[in-house]
Amino acid sequence: MTSDFHKAPKAWAQVKHSILRNYLSLFLGKLGVSGNPVYYVDGFAGPGQLDDGSKGSPLIAAELAVSPPQESRQGILQCINVEEDTETFRNLEKATAQYVKMKRVKNFLGNFQDRLPEIVAELGDNTAFFFIDPFGTGGVEVDTLRTIASRRGKTERLVRYDDTRVKRLLSWAVNNEVCEIRS
Image 1 (cartoon, rainbow, N blue to C red):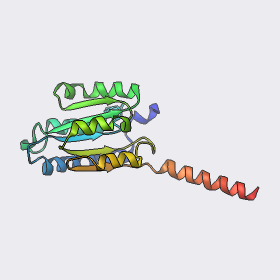
Image 2 (cartoon, rainbow, N blue to C red):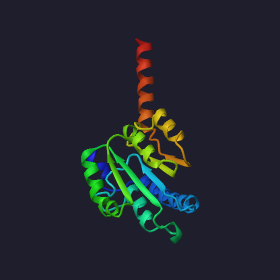
Image 3 (cartoon, rainbow, N blue to C red):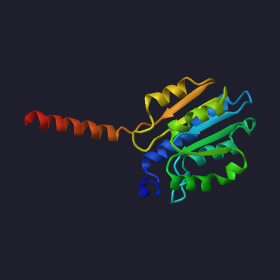
Image 4 (cartoon, helix red, strand yellow):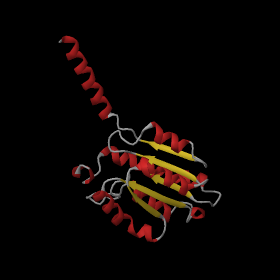
């Protein structure tokens, strides 16, 4: 993982986290009405907190789990975070330690797609919100999305797909194809 990436939030990250905070709050308010657990699954959690102290998606969700805007939703939101990079995972564990102790958060080290069957089994029929925001393009494979879509229980997905790398690959392919044609 690029170390500069987690130093301070970029403008797009601030907007993304604002959208996540508002949407997850509304999601919990609407679908947490039964009193059954509602799960938040962050497939590419990152460190939870950036070097400058800014909160990442795992902390945003954990705080909402502990202090939802609607008192009647207290104790309903459960958070599951997945992080593949070992050093970043250690930082995630530190950032979420108090929420893990409160049994509001579980952190999984590993690849999201590899851990997904275990996560889906844990969710059971409960309502779930998946936040899929990979660093780059990996992790948003069709099989991953199919697994999520085919699970039991109400499911929402917010997928942020970074198409910058795809555009670069397409540009490279076009340029190489042009070079081959000219040769």
